[in-house]
Amino acid sequence: MISIPMALLITATLGSVFAGLTCSIAGVFVVRLNMASIGFCMSHAAFAGAAFGVLIEIDPLLTAMLFSSIAAVLLSPVASRAKLSTDVVIGIIFSLMIALAFIFLNLSPGEAASGSALRILWGSIFAVSEFDVLYLAILSVAIISFVILFYKEILSLLFNRKLAEAAGINTYVFMLVIVFMTGLAVSFSLKLVGGLLVYALIINPTSTAYQYFWDFRKIMIFSPLIGVASCIAGFTFSLETDFPIGASIVIVSAALLTVSIVISPKRRTAKGRA
Image (cartoon, rainbow, N blue to C red):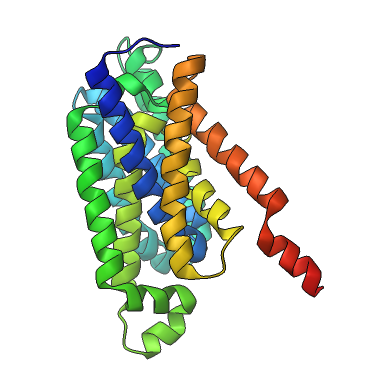
């Protein structure tokens, strides 16, 4: 088991809690709105931004936020002007971002094989600072407040976007806010989970919750609980095995999802109806 100072242990634990909370709440929107490809693109845009931060020697969090914001802004306008489907544009931006990420890491003097680069790839307990935890906590409050204040509008949007528009809801603004919040959740969780793995923390907890519940309110409650549990269990697993924390979190969340699919009450109900 890794021996780490108590202060760092507390910081990493809190970081795991808030990362699981923010990513899994964002995951509810990503899964329900069939935005999986957008979430994938945003996670790798943040990864490229963090790699750029290592190259120019500034806080990778700032550049991760910048790149994910740019990707969010570019998605709809590029798809519209190029007369291409959103999925095609997402594929283009994703491949560009992953290429830029490895170029930036390759150009970083002495960093490509060092701890800084590896932390961006796989995440690290030691990379999480008090400020990272603070940012994640603020984002958690912001996302929860957004859901509470606009619950009816969000529910309408998730049920049927066209009907929500017909009811006078500005769905474009809500979609933009959701995409930006997803980008921020990815950026703030990057140091802990890693750029190549953070996407799984968005998808897996919500997919697990969907195996048990039909009601959206319950999914919205249990998805972050599952996300937090995955992060805490993954963190503990990482300490015990000396595996990267990001990989450990993903392994735990994937295992929970696998078990949930096998024992899913919804699946048994569907079989009974058939």
